[in-house]
Length: 361
Image (cartoon, rainbow, N blue to C red; front, side, top):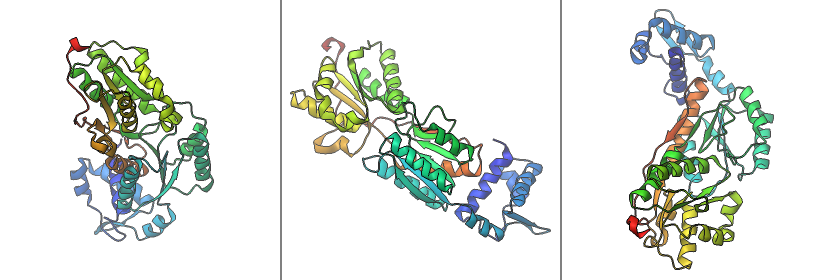
């Protein structure tokens, strides 16, 4: 990213947030040079670009000010961000959306929200509506079934061609060259499974989501931890479920119990899955953690319900939403901004993993 673009982004963000109001003087060239460690020529170039857009105006012998005309410019420029997520409910989405909205408000942007229900049809309808109205400043999108070929990439490419800044959350479409803010799912899953291996478990199964990128990334983390521990990996121990399966877990009860019956440890895709699996096992008389250890992802309220003490990797929720909003605003002001960020989280240890010896397996 060029230094002058960094200066432009900083000034315009402060104008949008109200820190620099119309008529206010911006820092001098010398102050900008010191703050950004740039030459006077670079500072002048950045200011000149903003003057050409009518955002700043220079007064001889006085300095450079936010143009009064910028009030009209800002009014004419859309200040609304389209936020598209798969669901509105659940233990992740409300707090993530809260983080997005709070940070956008800090920058003077409003939020227009829509939900795909994790279906391609609904996603397409939302994107078509955005293209028809063409009245947003940027987009924050949670992909729909990100591990599957997406029939709506043509619409995303059309939005990109219109230079609408776009950032994905939780996952991303690898076919599109767009930034994302998410967990580092591979590394977080690796840490969860490594906890099982460090407690002596060798026969470790996993239950993962087939149709999103997080499931595949978490599988990579599982494989890494198993290989580092010298554990064998059996296909029978890997259970893949899709979105519909997660909505009807009871229908998968026997398959899950059958596939994982030889295991002493389980890595679950998320807390929702873990709670259901623990219930299935309990109904068969299998005690947690004495007879089966379980680790999970998200560290939601479910991890501590009904006396449960589930070991789980926390999802950053509000922090992730706020970071996504902040990075999108940076992207709006500077198309070259490196907006991708992946959170690395450590497992919250409670009481769902037992320490066993290799001989017991």
